[in-house]
Length: 625
Image 1 (cartoon, rainbow, N blue to C red):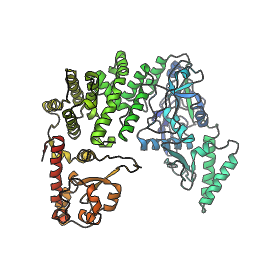
Image 2: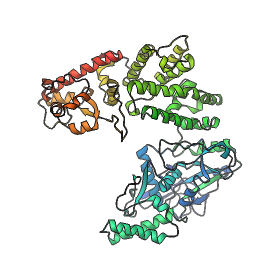
Image 3: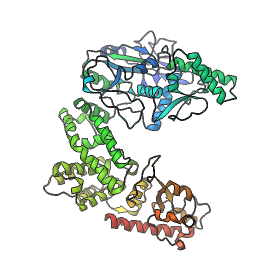
Image 4: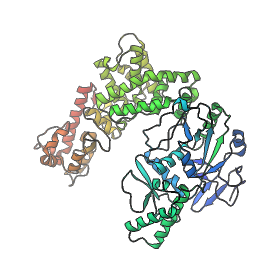
């Protein structure tokens, strides 16, 4: 043991790798602190606790509790203040991995950190935790009549852990149920692979038990619960050894002690003083979020705005859901919306809460109602109806589309013009801007800021205002930071394949849903196969052209599954009905020599020319060969 002030030898004050925070948990001496270090079997754990002097100043007094006790309080007396950011533990796959590690720490009886809780009867806006967790959902703020409840306690730190425990023990997570492998031996394997998610209401693999089944077990029937689980495993795994049976029994007892009983206290919480005011609590909230999962600039700004308008972030979530519903899947989340608002209020797309004054916070609130309609119109009337863009995967840079959204906003607020009033010329210019900004990477902050400034200036003039594409292009050319002419190689970008395929097939509604229900869910087919069954006659020439976008075609999965590595001539001779699903074919005469592998490069070059000519005819864009 290295360090000072810890109640050795109990190794209970640790660095919590799950929350990314440093937590203290030392029975008998809650005031201990310092840079203590303790090495448990197979793991190195570090300690730094909130200094005792700081806890005293904040009125913090350590209180331990069990997982069971905590979960029983969630949505009964424990709630989330409106200023809390939404659940944020990385992307979906990472969220699940964090949860595995969190529950693995619980199984090993490692402390999982402290909560900061404010018990107050002050009228503070709050929302409940989600039951069935879904990253697309945000619970609604409780009615104003409940804000002054005397029994409410608001969670200012610990949301991620509580939400994970609550959903995984009582409900579902992304429509999946968390299960534990009763055959997993934590004494032999230090990796957290005893937990796994399975689809809701489906059978789980042999050896796994649902965590909600454990949580909802009758507390008075432990022996019966353990025997039933063991009997079920014996029947499904007939060769259960004595060693495995012992592991299962130990795991069942451990699950019971941790999630049904209340004896083992792995959580702790600090209640803030009741007499504190909201400003003091918000200051603590900011300070405790400077370690671990640090608040982003957007989250800090959201918390400030929500002080002025409690349901502000909730409204942005609702707007995003409407956009997704109207477009069939495109997500433009609260952070993206906040960027647009920051641009309209501050003239800069980069969110910086330190530069936003109190008066400007009120401006965010006042601008938002006027932005909602043009924002939704941009995604539905332009991206969806003009291009059938249904998913953000197609758009390489969301920041680059912000000037287009600004144009919709200024046309509505300065010219009282909706999309139906836009001229065909203006719509054509917007399409050109979309293509240039994505393919030439006009997404720098300075570009977005200056483009939006130019757009606002043009819209402030009296009369109609066509989208000023040429002025934006001139500005980019003057600054010489980005290319302003489109070349064939730009269309052939490996990073923008989905976007290029979309703009050359604008009438095909791509979707990326797992169960598209008869909608076009594309896969990319190499017309001449990337890995042909037989070596082509001129390999160097063949492989030079085959990976290019000129040889790619978005197709339905059933076509791609049939075609596999077949040469196109062979495939279309066998399945001629699929010829109509392919675009820009140089010829439909399968006897033409260009359909042969020997002349694949001629076929692909001919298709390239057709695509470049089509882009000029359809969009008015000259593409340098």
